[in-house]
Image (cartoon, helix red, strand yellow):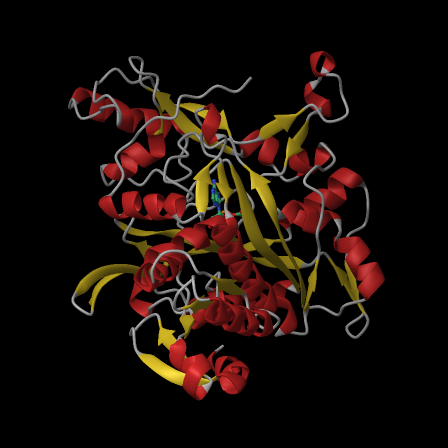
Length: 472
Ligand code: GAP
């Protein structure tokens, strides 16, 4: 049974505030919390699921609906054991692990070195141990949890998570191990041929999929930034080798534009070029976002030129021809690939981090999520001014029933109006509609309150649908 002590590590004040909001308002919960939690695993509550799905849908729209050259796939998590041998993950997908001999806190050695300004990304274990020794001699090497200096040397730690799929556990042989996929793109390569044979796309074209991936992360401790179970949104664009540079730049532009369209300010985004590359990549840039909760820029997405590594390897290991025949040039070749790979859960954290806002409204301090309208979990909340006045409640329900067929709405008659506004502000609802006595006695109009400004305006009930259609 997996038993990992959930180590309490220092997090920034902003991160504490976001974690607290997520729990209080039903966005994200610690996985298996009633049993003390399971490290690096989180569950999404009602609003968190809605927010995550809206981010997913926006990505999918930009990849599929807004383009003519990318197709969808939903491949299985379990894949033939040879998949990850062919891809190089079984031999190569590891991180350098060190452990505190006193409190058994496990740390990533490359992250420790990076904290001292030493670039150790994908460096050999010998290099890492030499650098750790220097820090040890200078008495700078300390446990991030207990502060003591008794730290082991680094060793390779595989990120691959095994299952006993199809074998009785006690007879599980290495060659039969079916891994949980560490990245979703593996399924795309295995279904490349079926996609070509069934849809007959012309090069260049892409295959996109959204799904779960699993990595046995050493230090899964930055809330939903780095977890052991997570979701990726990946797209593999199949091209002729000669087009690599052009298509790589095209995808960098497309993806950066998406972040800007989702309301992330330009100065909070930057490109980071990898000097040391993963075993499959010939070029790699990360989109980095300036997380106030993490104290600086960190990766949310990678754009990789993977060459013909993946299809060549799977062709070699499966014995199946994965080449492409170009009718026009009469050329047969293995397509090269440009990949875009974003972490959906990381994007949830990015949008929460960017939206978390404290201001002063009407002389009172308030906290609200300034989420872009299209991503907000609830678009409109409808209230009766008082819950004990049946005429107000009935009218508010009537309006709610109409609006909810077009927009994700919520009806709320709990507590006083101030409390309801505060709750909706904290979950990022852009508009609140209130039915009051004037509505039913006088003008058939309601008050619509704007989340960001707190401004209120009176709108005719029969014009509400059109009013909100223009807003969203
Ligand atoms: N197919 C390429 C690939 O998987 P990656 O840089 O390892 O590349 C891509 O991962 C993205 O997946 C990252 O930019 C990040 O957003 C997300 N990701 C990776 N590991 C993660 C983890 N342990 N928890 C949450 N998201 C993760």
